[in-house]
Amino acid sequence: MTDQAALASKVEPGVSQLRCIGCAAVGEEGAKSVRCAQCGDLLEVAFPGWKTDAGARAAGLDAAGLKKLWLERRTSWNALDESGVWRFREILPALNDWNRVITLREGNTPVYELPSCGRAAGVEQLFAKHQGMNPTGSFKDTGMTAAASFARQGGFRWVACASTGNTSASMAAYAARAGMRSLVLIPQGQITWGKLSQALDYGAVTCQLKTDFDGCMRVLDEVVQRMPVYLLNSVNPYRLEGQKTAAVELLERFDWEPPDHIIVPGGNLGNSSAIGKALLEMKELGLITRLPKLSVIQAEGANALVRTMRETGGKELVSVHAETMATAIKIGSPASWKKAVRVIEATGGAVEQVSEVEMALAKAEIGADGIGCEPASAVTLAGLKKLVKQGFVKKNESVVLILTGNLLKDPDFTLKFHRGDLFAGTEHEEEAAEVLTPRQRAPMVLDASANAVVKVLEYAEQTDPRK
Ligand code: F0G
Image 1 (tube, rainbow, N blue to C red):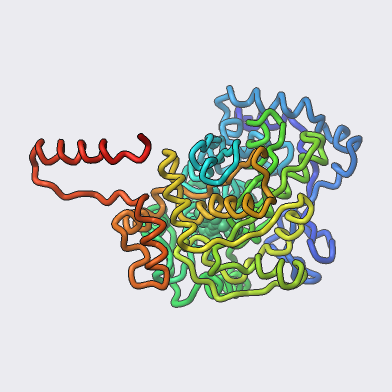
Image 2: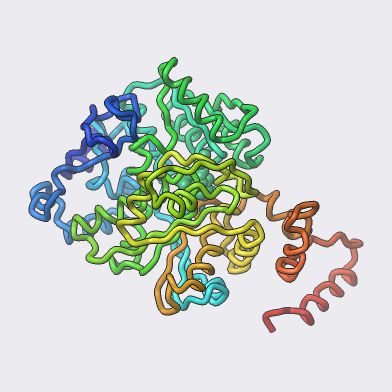
């Protein structure tokens, strides 16, 4: 037995099952389909042994013991312990053979204080958990290590996803590590070069379809019916299990004293569903005694969840034709909307939407705090400003923004922003000029002389807004 398997065998993971979120039918664990065979709704991983505190203890899930065990693993060199996902394996579905886990040492991402962003939003305690610090630069890696490992356990040769870029980058990397082939469907001309280049580098068969993300998803649904290919979009329940750990890690970092609010960007709504599931499960297991409110922010042009909540009270999905520069969340028909509605309601969170200019300003503010993120992540700060104005978030409450992607995923957006041409020729041009100009730092082309550089330096010092 290898070290990895020996260590894993010392723990008794909770027994899990796949259950339909619609009709509650229990499916076959590890089955190929990610939808309910009875009614077609999404599946989720359930842990029936956790129903009560006594049940949790019987499954070896004593809260104090788990907290101690998870923290101790941070000093271990075992690959499972080094992963910020598998470190928490007692609350994840168990693999038959722990040696089959595919890990790039994902998770264990930093939590930063954001003092000036906090001032801009009007809250005293603002933090960012930066999931863009994962191996392929986005939060997707935490889910992918789980789902790709189950794909390998299931004996699949091919895995596939439709993507706005980050899922495909992550899936291609994990598939390559596992010796599996990967198929990527992306909307032509609508994903960033950074993300596209990752999928190519990691050896994915990459198809740019002449449609949007929602169209890619429809095509892929048919492909997986016809070919022996395992679907790794976030409708895959194992993805969400891995993504839960971002919330667990966050609570551990706060010594299990929950913040008042957690704010996430919403696209296909897998991430908000996963984080919400983790919060509810942690409460159920007695790891925390109070739930943070989980709020989801969307771009105005891709606001299916916002409309779903406002127009139908979360009962029927209102699909939209998505348009936003935040290509990561340019999604009109979010697959996990029901799961997201459930956790937003259970935690008492809110949904909000922000304009393109509000998002661009927030991204520059996060960058100016020395953190940086991709545009989709910045909707969190822009949304927080609105939630504070509405009184939903109070000045003295603690808030954590989940930043989902690395700044370097979309350098084009940042360059255009600072050159001042991000909104050129659009209806937002005037508003952008007024709001964004003070934040712009265009690169300068100079003669190769010290004099020229010194002049620039002197001018920058005289006009420093922070003086
Ligand atoms: N932020 C980033 C950077 C993303 O890439 C995504 C989704 C989201 C937020 C939204 O997360 O879909 O779980 O609500 N990107 C997917 C992709 C859709 O294909 O990479 P969600």
